[in-house]
Image (tube, rainbow, N blue to C red; front, side, top):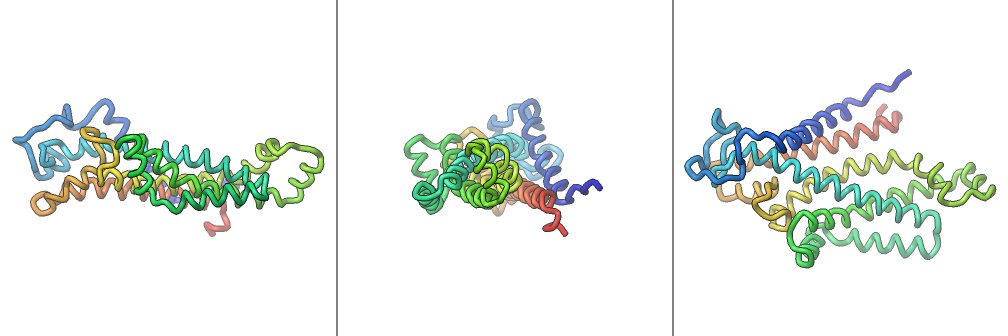
Amino acid sequence: MRERTPPRLLVGGMLLALVAGLALVAAWWTPVAEPLRLRMRARLLAPGSEAWFGTDALGRDTFSLLMLGAGQTLVVAVVSVLIGAALGTAIGLLAALRGGRLERALMRAMDLLFAFPPVLSALMLGAALGAGRTSAIAAIALFTLPVFARVARNGARRVLAQDFVRAARALGVPGAGIVRRHVLPAIGGEVAVQASIQMGLAVITEAGLSFIGVGPPPPAPSWGRMLADAQTYLGPAPWLLAAPAGAIALLVLGFNLAGDGLRDLLDPRRAR
């Protein structure tokens, strides 16, 4: 009997598709032509037919800025987590395969990385590389690296303890072959679930970095900078805060629901 797709995976996928679709459409169309151009006569317009989500203090259309910022946020979140997942999984597999002093040294190094908050890492990288997308991606990737290393190492140790893996080793199958044939298929689901959850955290981190000025510099649109700019106008223009905050919440919810749905799909006992 075919397994039913978990509802949370469907809802999360639709939310992610919505945000990704807006980001793709923004490359060709936005409600306002030249959305980054200043229009001081149209500043702080309330949401309406002229501007669906209102305008900011520089007269720019808020919804257009949200569409442009969606691509920026998705690129930083997805690329940083993929880098962290690839490197962290490789480190975790190496630690589980080799064991001994190498495993202890690698995992202690991961603990040291995990002790540094992503904001602190971004500030140090920003000082070295300059504020921008590269610094944000590097900081988030460093923060997610130990998470995937732990997931891969624990999953690999569980698989390597199985009798069929011991038999394969006794027959002379090399470690790379065991990882490719047995370990990676067994832990792939866990890594995918963790990646989805980490992408939600990466969205929040990227917004926080842009909020404090470490993210992509102006005029590149950013949801975190939109939040920072909205602080001054909470009273006369609350929509300036509501729009980016709602977009961030929607995207994080999509990633979290997708991660929970993947976990239910890969482990039906947990769903029941």
